[in-house]
Length: 269
Ligand SMILES: N[C@@H](CCC(=O)N[C@@H](CS)C(=O)NCC(=O)O)C(=O)O
Image: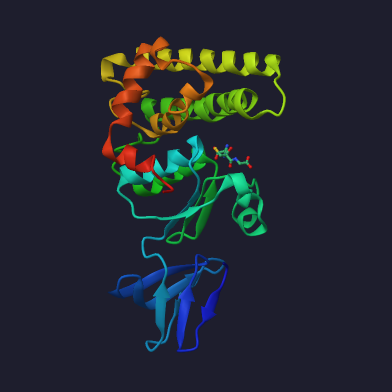
């Protein structure tokens, strides 16, 4: 992918290794590009005016993902932000995420991964992706809080709590309950109980913020709510009834009913 390929007719194909500085769109996905900056260089390169350039994705964002709790976090956030993006399906049941070309993008061999052509940045780990998107594309803080505020640090706390607690524990509970080749009662009990305990903590976060509304932090949804939503959506797979946590239940129904969230849950098709 790291290349600018000359094409026979004097055109070049732009891939995500270069940042387009100045362009003029002439048709959907096609542009005359005047200046580019290869990502490993600091100086722009001025292209001859006769050179025609095909841009595969003018919005610049490509999401490599699959229908899983972690995948949904990013498609939901992209939808809420109203950003255009290309989706590439990575079927994890076929181990596509372990192929060399994908490991090049994410050495951890897991989805999702986001490529942003407009900055030349490729990023994995959903907590980091959500923070990246908030930093770059949520300058008005519609789904995040500004650095230095009390809400910002609570957002960080609850995001890390999801990433290091709920995600891994619920993931292990799913594994022992649904996928392990042998039944290991100790594993099932340990991780299911830990998942239940963690949702009681979510209930407590929501209770402490109840005066502000059904949000984990402050007076609107933020990246921590989005991170938790993908996993809450699959709680039923463990046979756990969400109603045992009334505030989690209300929060979930309200957030899930947003049209952008519904759309994010349908990616990839
Ligand atoms: N901590 C990672 C976890 C990513 C993850 O575990 N992704 C799963 C799908 S939800 C995956 O790719 N599984 C396939 C595998 O483990 O090979 C993140 O938040 O992005």
